[in-house]
Image 1 (tube, rainbow, N blue to C red):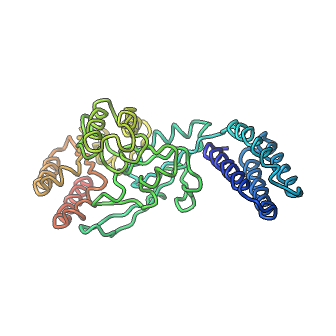
Image 2: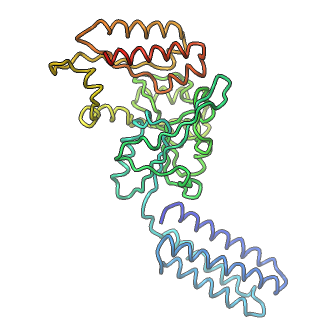
Length: 383
């Protein structure tokens, strides 16, 4: 049985309490008997729910069956309301027994969208999968590109591209509302507030908060030192119960910015933000020993005699691209051109996963120019 299911049963017992109060108001035996019949049927369905999810012959189910027998006696009595006090006395022991029902496992759902950002959740996923007390579901969700007017122009679904060691669940079959997972992990910050992309609205943090006991947002990026203040007031930071950040210095920035931008709405920032590191660092630490280098990249990074070239990792972000786009493109061209003339070194360029979509949406006049630079870089790698 899951914790959520136990809570559902307690809510059903509250319905029985309310039914008893309603029965007290009835002066007509005929109407009372009709209501007693409804309560008996309702009680039977609660017993069936307990048997299905907690196993048969639990104390809670047995007490409810006794409760049902009392109702059966009321149905054949001249004055069924004489049994109301007895029914009322039976409810507290039933509730106590329900609270003792054993919770077997915690259900955890991951809702990644862009595959290139999966490394921001992956090590948490594997840690949860290794815990016998957890039922874990990785549910990749659809995401969409926007044009400069905010209209959807391209749809994406990366669920069929994940590594074989990731067990994938179909987002159309995983009913998050019905399952109400105990914990949900997301890495999309913006809901509908991103000018470049959006995930399917069913998976906005504003909605997911109400469908789980613990919504956890893990940023898909790392900054190392500090963050722009608006990062702390994105929808995911607002609606998540917990936000996992990479280090204590960044934690202080998140808390300070959240207080300034939001205050104490949606939870105290000192409790909401937690410094536990980033799965992206975990991925970097394990990549060298776990990642199988393709033949294409092997040819780029190694000389013909098998010796390795000096590798320069070049990571480019969105914020710099939007600050001065033309200068940014000139710099990209210059850097790539420089490495074309170096025989002992190679440039390993990692643009932000959404950089191409950002140019299409927010700098459409420069989009073709950016794509040409990408094409030139790929040709450089093939030389």
